[in-house]
Length: 89
Image 1: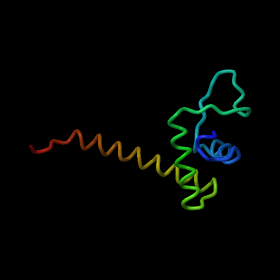
Image 2: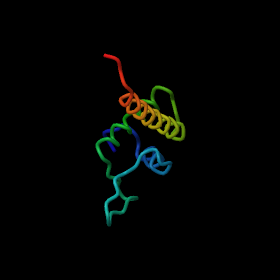
Image 3: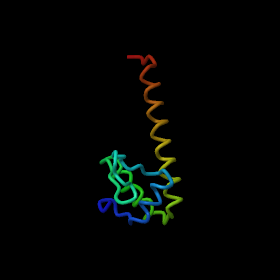
Image 4: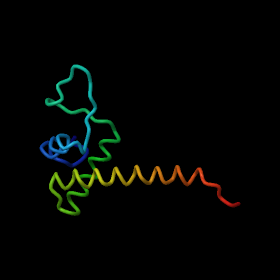
């Protein structure tokens, strides 16, 4: 994933740790070459920035990415709950 700034080894480890998920295509050998959705490239770029800014190893990157994903999910749930509440005009 040359667009992310991560090395192939870093990317492979993040995939192995479950922090980044490649697209699964039937009949394709995933070990040979990964295929990613555009949103995954955004996540990989975020991982590179975290690595550079905080000098994280790949396990630290995986943890940070998982925590950021969890925060986004909780923010979405909070926004949905807030949308259901009555708001005075």
